Image 1 (cartoon, rainbow, N blue to C red):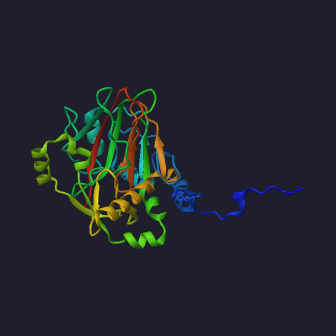
Image 2 (image 1 turned 180 degrees about the horizontal axis):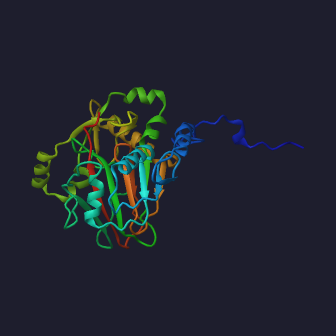
Length: 314
């Protein structure tokens, strides 16, 4: 009798292309070391459940509505750097408590386009319903069109639809590390122009866009960014805000932006968070991109976010 052999067993564990398409299949082997590192981490004062292979940790045992010691804040910061995005359940934050918690990690920014909570200007309010659609369902990091983008963000779920409205996060370290050496050499040292116009320009008339460009002109940031605290390299382009690659013609630049941005589509690099009322997500905006699923229309979804000012990308 002929023995049947699993066709996958005769292929070395590696990514392979399904010709003639660009899609890659196979185990994402470069994640193993980071996945194992995260699995072995321990923290003082709380437990962490690993959500994705290399990204996402659900923290249990911390009440962020109260006063936290400097030592505990330092541990939460370490956990954030490790897991890239961390989550808390059952945190009924008032707007004042939300701002107070976020401020423990640095100065907070004011967003020039998204309306704020009426009592706390540091909180931007995402209030979606039948008449107001959600357009955040594209992979992006926050405000790369600023000279100094956000370091991190704290998002509080206030009203959550019964079905849908999850947020996905992508490990952009893993996205960079998964590129082949030829592509890494090609993009090393490249910079890109980032601009708010594609995402927010439709909210302004010509005079308004000109005035905002006076205050927030297009910014030039590295295509491959180095994280200011971990020292690790990551991809720092996205379709929402990256306008062009410096030194490339439009067609070549757009093709490269599209290819690099598409790395976030790799599900193995992602985690996905199911919101509940008073859940909180805190992400390292330097290390991850996020995607807010817009699958709950016409139901209502209300979130508030505080963002911590970061450093000039390098």
